[in-house]
Image (cartoon, rainbow, N blue to C red):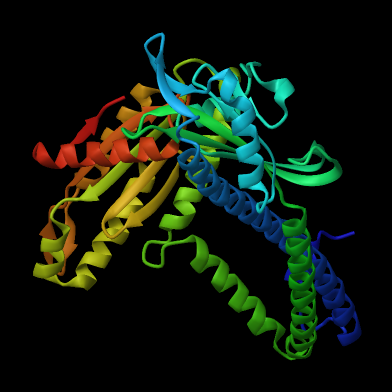
Length: 413
């Protein structure tokens, strides 16, 4: 059987209409299933994010109101030199009664209050008071100042009325607590009953998928009528759209979006295989800016400027390896990602690019024109920093090269 890509490419006038229709219907059905599956995944993920955001927001408001109303019982004290939440044991019964009354209108089924030592100083399930939760990463993040939310499906929870409620969906929210100076002094953990919200989101998911399904059926039928007569034009348009989505219209290399997407892939791959790679081998990142390019455009016109960018692109490509990722970052700025590269190799390639760009004059009509670049170069093995951090660093290095006189490579690893 021929690959599907070959089937699509070989569709033409010699194919019978019935055969072409069968192929199109197969493709339409496959696309319909794929789009519905992707839509289900995206909408489900968005619904979950909405649940998390909604539960986190309301839990934060409830925790702040509760802390304010019970400030005479839930106090901030300094213990062993650390400011932390504290509750007198004798006041727990009174606090428990107040909390149950306070939380009755809300969908909170359980609450815990932690001090800075990760010890539970209050809980609606009083058998947990005094216990410590040392290995709870979400609690640790909350005590570091980050609100944390986790969705748990079909949980068995004892609610505030001490009635066991089976199989409810719960949003477990950790809310950091700060004192008047903004210092973290503890954390609240609130269990939100989100069963009704989930039902609402599931209805939204069903109606959204139904709408998408109907729209796709209509679109498929319309496309079926058109594509039988306009297959060649449609195929050309698709190829053009695919090219426009990934390449820079002027130079033919990767555009900014595709360049950064490829960089993210390289970075993720490098991090996954870090333990299998020789030490000192990582990802080189190079940023290039054409010196005084605005002056070139203003003096010789934009057509000459475009011609220079095209020529410069070809010169840079001659200095690169086949597997290096090269693209136009914007305007007269370019970026290169050098996979499986050492620090010395990254610097060497950057210098090679610098020489390739300025080695021969360019042409502004009949006049020769010297063009130089400023280059920032860095390197990472991805062990302790994000790609955004690396991009910010190489951008700063580029401007260091400019501040130090241009027409040079400025490296820092």
